[in-house]
Image 1: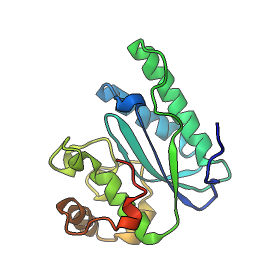
Image 2: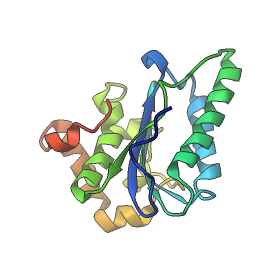
Image 3: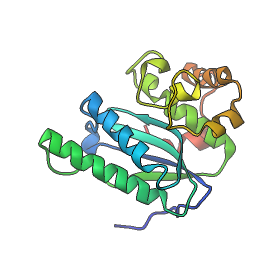
Image 4: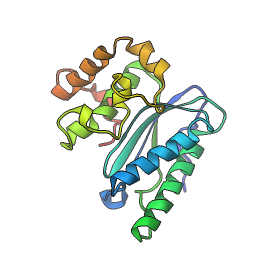
Length: 193
C-alpha cells in the first residue's frame, strides 16, 4: 500500500473518514453504532487522542481528532476499525472488506477550517435527510457540544475555548444547514460526502 501523505504529529488536528465498500452500510443496527462508540471509549485515552467531533452515518463515518501523545492517530484508527469490522462481519455472517480501502485523513491546520469542519461533521445527518433536527441523531457528539447530553467523547476545553456560550454553536451549525453561512470552496473541496 502507498504511504500516507500526512505524517500524524502530536498536537495537530486531523479529519479522519471512510465509507463502506461499494458505498454500502457499515452500521447495520443500533448495537453496531453503540459497539463502535464503546471501542472509542476503550481506546481514546490509552492512545492519547482528543475527540473533537464525530458523526457515525449508516454508510460512513467522520472523526475530527487531535493527537495528544506519541502514538499515531493511524494506529488508534487501525485498532478501532479492525476490531469493529471483525466483530460486525462475525455478527452478520459476512466476509470481505467492510470499508472502501484505507481510511482517509486530512491535516487541519487552519482555525477557520477547524470550526467549519465541526459543523460539517455534526450537520451530516440533516444534510443526508436522515433526521430533520440535529438533536434527533444520537450517533454524533453534537449533543455534548451543545450541553444537552453528558458524555466522555468530546474535548470540553476545545468546545468552551471556541464556543463559551453553547447557543452560539447551535446557531453556527444552523446557519450552515440553512445555507446562510456555507463552507468556503477552499474548505469544501476537502470534505467527504
